[in-house]
Length: 520
Image (cartoon, rainbow, N blue to C red; front, side, top):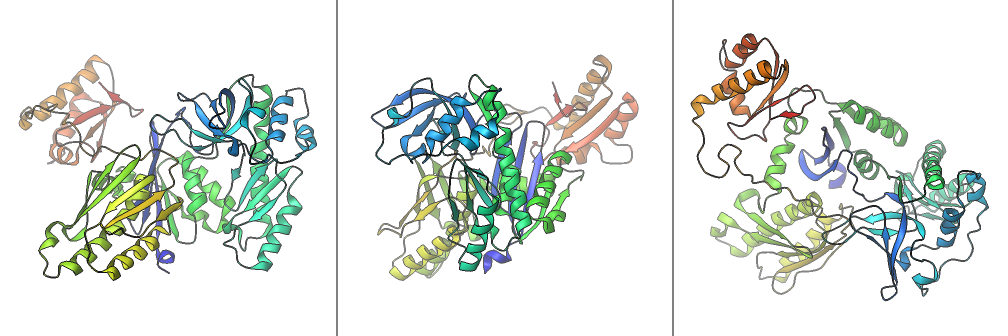
């Protein structure tokens, strides 16, 4: 199959302020995400001890304070089957108790009925363990569930549960029986599990090790729960790096490039745990140019996140995003002059469908997506385009639904929305003219750099600096055997390094200290 022939590379760029991840398929960017270092915001999978802030009987729901700027929301149906067990554990936990004995001694009791009322189980001020299932979007806070789960590569651990479920994608009855018997035999009391598709064919040692690590992670949070007198984040599911590896890692993964030794060790040890044969694919990148520039990620980000997205053969997309709706318009561009208009429209629409499926993953667009394809006269072409789009979307991890084209040539797509759409402003105000359209003469740029260097070395006493410039300016100041750059190092007797950045405009420059911080 085509999906099996794809080569997946994960590029991880770690900086002081954020971690950026780019998933490449055959050297083409298909997923992009970033997380801030030390960010106090909440992400999907975070487990928090929160406080009920307000009951909403009309919605059969409640607002929960989890320490975020916006109050989170939990519906009665998201309390889970065994909410009373979680509630008992929260109320009776304290630092003086044997928490393991307490956990195992709690009776699961009858499950919550579907027709129940939230006011019968929650009251204002009550402490409750919740997990984030949808991040804050626009004016809405996080969506929560009180049915906690810890996802691994092969198994999902379910605290306070008594069942073992198996992925329907595992078709072999013998394999289902083997996995179910194995997991049931190693699950402690008051634990359930979901056996994921990836566990098919895995030996007992791998599954036992993974289940043990998930149980340890859950049980290590108990001390925080017992000692906390208020709202507290108990644990995060995992970093985005390991989350991508957990969900996507397969035999087609060829490389994971990381430019930070700590994250490299984290990724390597995680892969060694879930797939020991692939440990060698994790590689520490130590090249001179930025890792995203080296693998041409930066260029693809710049060309893929604008309002207008160019495609092959002159066609292009126009993408508009609102709070509730995403609209994509397909334009044939210069190809509209072709002789056979119907075949031309069908060909452009197929090219557009491939790019749209990529853009949905790349920007993580959720909710309702309306695509205005170029009009086609034949029903055969419309049906073929619909089937083609369904096939393209089959590799998308997010839950989605694609509807056939309407008579107006519109296709409706719904896609799971768990976080805000990734938006990157690919236009920027010129840092040199500040919007005026006029800049200082380029012939004196070397004097400006030298004056700034003299100030930092002679006035500030700094002797370990990095000059960050655009590639064009770098070529100018390093040209010749007696270049400006060599002259500055000799003249000011300082340690001076040069770093090129494709994010910088032609004459933009900055000096950074030894920690990488930009100096004003």
